[in-house]
Structure formats: C-alpha cells, structure tokens
Amino acid sequence: MAAPWANTYYACPCSELSAAAPPNVSNGGTPLELPGSFDNGEEGSTFDPHNPRANYSLYPLDNLLYCDECDAIRCPRCWIEEVINWYCPSCMFEVPTSAIKSDGNRCSRNCYNCPLCTSPLTISSVASPRPVEDSLKPSDAARPQESYLLQCQYCDWTSLDVGIQLDRPTKITEQLVRLRKSKDTKTDPISVSNREETFNNLTNFYKEELQGSTESQTPFGNSPYNSPANLARIMSLYGGVSHTALKKSREKPQPMREASSHSQGLLVYTADKSDAEEEILQRLKELGWNGTTTGEQRQMAPVNNDARFLGQLWPVATALRTRRGRRCRSCRQFLTRPDPKMGSIRYKIRLLALNFIPRLSLKPLNAIPPPSNPAFRLTLDDSPQPLLQPFTPLQYVLTIRNPIFEKIKVSLATPDTTPGKVASKVTILCPSFDVGPAGDIWDEALGSSTTTPSAANDGGRKAAMASLTGSTTDTDRQPEAGKIWEKTRNSTSVILEIVPGSLKPPSRIVTLTKQEREEQAPRQDDDRLEIAVYVRVQWETHEEGPEAGLGKRDAERKMPSGEAKVAKELAYWCVLDVGKIADV
Image (cartoon, rainbow, N blue to C red; front, side, top):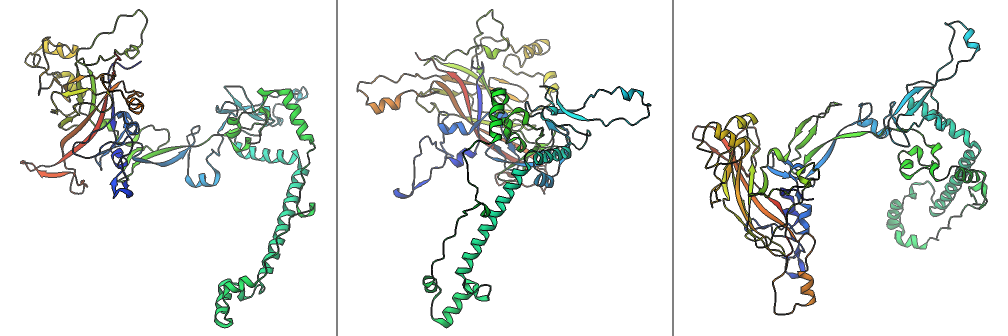
C-alpha cells in the first residue's frame, strides 16, 4: 500500500559529475548523447525522475550525510569508511590491529559460538557421580579434578557431542588447540607420515632436476662470468660476438624429467575404495541427510571446512567486529565517528543531512478522509491511496522545515511540465519565501505557532485552540499567487498546483510504425507522478574565527554593527512522489 503523504527523495550532487557525456572522437570532439542522460548545465538544467540514472542518485534524507567543510550533501558514493577499532561483541574487549594481523579476526579469549545455530556458548561443569568409596574419605581429602564443557543455551548442543572435555574454565583457546593437534595425530599417524615423506621426495627430486638444467646452461658455474650482463659485456669488447648470437649458438637444454617411482615422490591413484571411504558411506546411511553439515556451517570457520557430519563440528571462535567512521572523499573530514569507548553507542562526530538540509513534505490541501472500514487498522499507511484523475487540477501544500538556527531564504523552481512520456503541469504559487530559524520545541508550543490570515490577529484562547487543533476559522480561504499558505516558527507552507497528464497518447490520423509504437509504449512506473523541484537555500552565519577555513563559494561581508558574517548558499534537486495516475 502506498503512503497517504508523498515521499520525498533528495539528489546527491555527485550524480552531476558522473553524468557528463564523454567526447566523441570520431565527430570532432562533440559529446555523445548517452541513453538516459540528463542536462547538467547550471542554466535551464532539468532533472528527470524517470531516468534510469536517477535510481542511483536519489536517496531519502535519513540516508544522507552533510559535509560542513564542502557545504554539500554526501551520499554513500561520496564517503569512504575507515576502521576505528576492532572488538569482540561477546566480551566487548578491544583488540589491537597488530593482533588482528597475527592471530586473525577471531576472539582469542573465551568467546565461542555454537557451530549449529551460532548462539554464544557458555561454560558449564560436568556433573560426575561420586563413587561410593569416596563417601568414607574425610572431608579434607583430595577431590577428583573437575571437567568442563561448552554448552549452547538455544539448541542444547554441547562439546561432549564431538568428544571435547575441558580441564579448566579459562584459556579455552589453548585447550582446544591442544586437543585438535592430539586428535589429528591419533587419527591416522601413518598416513600423515607417508604424505610428508612422499612430498619431501618429490621436492628433492625436482630440486635436483632444476639444479642440473641450470648447470648445463651456465658453463662457467659459480665464476664471475656467470652473470648474463657481465658475459655480454666481455664478449662484445673482446670476442666481437654479441650476446644474442652466443645464445643462439648454444644447444637447447634438455627437458626436465618427471617423477617415475615412489622414491622420487610419485603417488599413483588407485580406484579401490579405502576403509575410510567405506566408513563414510556407512555413517551416511545411518545418519541420513539430516546428520550432514551444510555449506554455511562448514564455511563458518576454517576448522570445520572438512567436516562432513554434525558430530565433526568444533566450536567456532566469535568473529570480531569493527567500529567504522566515514570520511568525505573530497576534504577527508570525518562525517561520522563513533565513540571509541567500548559499550558506548554515542558518536563523537555525526553530521546528518537532516540536521542541515531543509526537509520538504507534500500533502493534499483538501485531504479526502478514508472510507470507514470495520477492519482493524494499525496505521494510516495501510489505507490505499486514491488514484490521480487525468486533467483534474489538484492543490497540494508543500511544507519546508528549517533545521538550523539561522533564518534562511528559499527559492523553488520546477519545470512547467514534468519530463517523461506523461506530461503533467506543475505551478508553484509562491516560489520565494523566508523560513524562520529552528528553536526550542517549548518556544513553539508556548508561542503562537501557526500564523494564518485569520488566526494571526486573533489572540488568547481562540488562537491557541486553532494552533493546537490545526484548524482555521476561515473555511472560505483560497490560495493566492505570491502568498504563503501557512507559517510557523521554523516552517513555511506554500501551495502547489498540479494537473496530471494522461497515460494514453493523443490520437493520430497517420498510422504509427512499429518502432514508434514501441517507443510510445508505457514503461514501468510511467504512471507515477514525480515532480522534480530545484531548491536553493541562502543564509548568513557567524564567522567562527580567523583560523576557520572558508570555502571559495563563501562570500564574506561586514555587517553595519561590525559583526563578521558569512553568506552561504546550498542548492540541490529533490523529487516529490505524488502518486499514481489513473488509466482512463
């Protein structure tokens, strides 16, 4: 279901740099017309929301950041991530980078996860029955050593399922490594020694072959004339023969021999099934498909890469996580930087775009109440949005809210007709206006928050009730060109008139060709009415000091009172998703 209010998306300026067409070398350097590209010139430029490129440049305001050094919006393509620190999510222990390079990205302490469900494992002592003869011993006698296990509280998996029993509840990693090595040596020590011996024989054989072929190519052995550069220089000075001719005159080296026996490292494959393979097949018949491991379980840790059955899975050390900061690609300034203190969810630096960019919202002027439905509805978003009728004038309230503590001047611009196959007419009745600074929420609640022609002059209880209920006393109020509709402390609303176009192409006398019919055929989302609005914001802010770096676009000027201020400007495209047009 569509939302009852229009969605607003903001365009990042980095799309303008990537949308420049490359020059056409075969056509005298004229730029090529890329399919789906849009004009990026400063004068008369337009933004097509139906362009396929627009999907990669439009973001909700909550997903954008702001760089106060560049005075520009930053999207995920405009920032780079930097690792601040590594930590374990279980014990919240910070791991230095040097330990990551040597030990890997796993916690080397007592943090392990279940190999079946990835839940954290807890350490529990194994309850062993006390023998009868121990009851006759004195209380201060030496007790047998306790043993411990790793247990999952979610799926009841224990380390006893794979034959792992620990001696103490600390230094689990060292105990598991020792048990792993002892288990590998006990499984098949003969085959391990045979493989090592075969590999050593094969390595020695090829080393001898390489040494013999090298000696045959260099007749001078270890003498100083063994170097090709020295030999070529001497032959050119005294012999009159070039090094190239000397190389051609030499005989070709003999090809290297291959290993032909077991003493040389050759291991011949036999198709006979070994006892290990027979054992695997027998266990597969007994356990079935549910007793085998999945690809995710095997790839969770290197120790489980060769595990075929669930009884062969070992506990998995907890993977480390990172706390990352984001830097601007242009000035390398931190846009977001989390607090390095472990366990803290605060940010030392967090430049969100919603704290710097004016927010635009659109809603119908005369909203039609949803029909009564006996079904229970949690939110208004569950109600269907009515379709827009073609060629029916509609009026919407466009609200601009100022998040900064400075008064801003806003200028809006939009094409007369929306680009695309469905041309709709759009008119902004008041394109230029001022928006007040943001302040404390209690200042807005205690003051006269809503200023309308009817409620501005009414004081006392009547104006307060009008501001709280959002209603006005003048029901016959009509929108006027050049006048704002509503104004609060840090928001201003203007009227937007829209005439939706028709999805059906105009009738023609001449029959269209097949190619023309394919071009005029409706594509996906052509029935959505999306309005591109160019927003230009201007404001003045206090200068931080002579050491503060100012951009080239900032124009400094001295106020009459002698207070230094800086004039700043920000411009960007945003897209208002009004709704769907009815196909009538």
